[in-house]
Image (cartoon, rainbow, N blue to C red; front, side, top):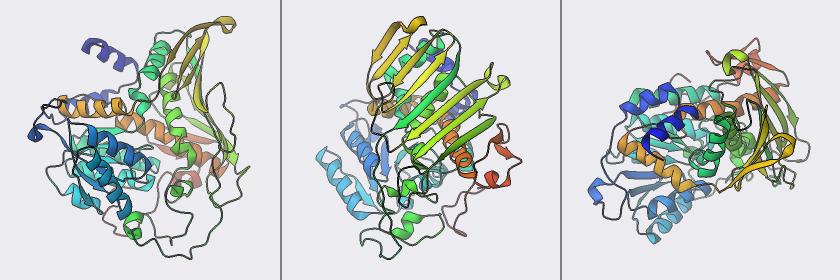
Length: 443
């Protein structure tokens, strides 16, 4: 795709003016991604959080001769040392750190990948921007809606590139499908649906009766979140089902398809109304988030040209695919429908359900890395720039809040405030430990 076509495509797929302004100010690194690049020219990078997705980033970066992986960092020493061994097997030689502050203090580090639990995404990103680092942060970009706004402000204030790990934004077959929607292939898209239908496992019941594992710095893992005692069904990975640390499966897997739904629907603001029903229909365990959820986001005509809806369905106890996809999207237009699965491909149907066109593909993590690094080197806004993902992650937060309070929410997109509902309004933010060094200012 040549540069002119790329600019046109980005314009029509939701790149905001603010993102363009930010990108134009970004520091540029002049180096090429090739095996002949000298060590002094390569961006120096680090991975903070070396669990499941963090290890995927370690493998990609250790094998990428266009960067130098200088650090792997995790509060669990066993995980960080395993990550270092994986990197060494690919030819890298990263140092091992437990405290992200040691990584951010190193002025030679140009960019960090943040793959921590959700409650660390915003604090770590803001600290990294303040330290002059560009940031690739995993989804959802924030633990709560207010944090997302603070992340945008930190990126702008420090003129840093911030990419969020919704790699579908850089995946060819997904971008092809969005291009078809933008070209009017199914008419005016008025409704977009995202679904998350899969069989999760129970986390059981436990009491805070065990000391943390010896290799884990639990206090550092908690970070600025209020203290809760350790228990067996909190770590690893299980944190995502607890209000204090995660965002449920809507913010875990759901955010990928919600982001695609918003992208295809063509809405570049928050919704004005949110209605939700849901709860625990299947699991009898300590999970605090719904296993069954149905959320409707309404965008008024003033925001979307015509009134539009975005729908999210979740059944994390159901091992049956919907429309051929475990997690997927449907776009309903005035002249047809497009069914999309980020894992496999898309089908475009015209009137009378006639199959008009289809495409195939799978998620492309290396392409998302390249997009981020290209923006650091040459300027430009990444495909999943922080302001873009803030709008999508906020849908997860608002959907979870509406489900939790059991009421229709009215939301002011301009001020990012819930109207006339103090209980819901309080959930736009979180409490932090008093005077903790990582608590974001203004939160």
